[in-house]
Image 1 (cartoon, rainbow, N blue to C red):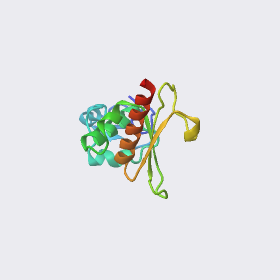
Image 2: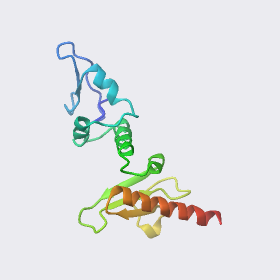
Image 3: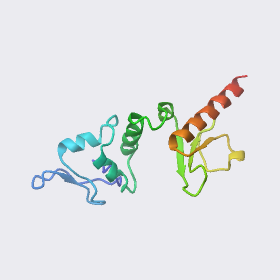
Length: 148
């Protein structure tokens, strides 16, 4: 099995401890029941799991899926954004600290090119949800213009 935090393989179940422990990052130390919970993408993260995710150096896709499930359940972000590719940046020094970047229509990649050189759609906001809403509305407007 692969550690959800560092991406490396972790040791098998230890009879003595009754848990499995990652040899690399030492973050994951779980019982078999907790292990099953970690690999269920639809389960939101609980507070103990969220504190572990904050320490992850190279989180596996399952951790990202569970984090998105948590955000969706809390209704902190529009559920529509969970179904598309997006990138989030946070800069506390900016007036609108959150940036949500959506892949442009017909683009096969998302890059860090300046806004005028790419078809990517960007939304800015004081919160992640606000930036996501702005990006989604711009994307809808872009689709409407392309169909006319």
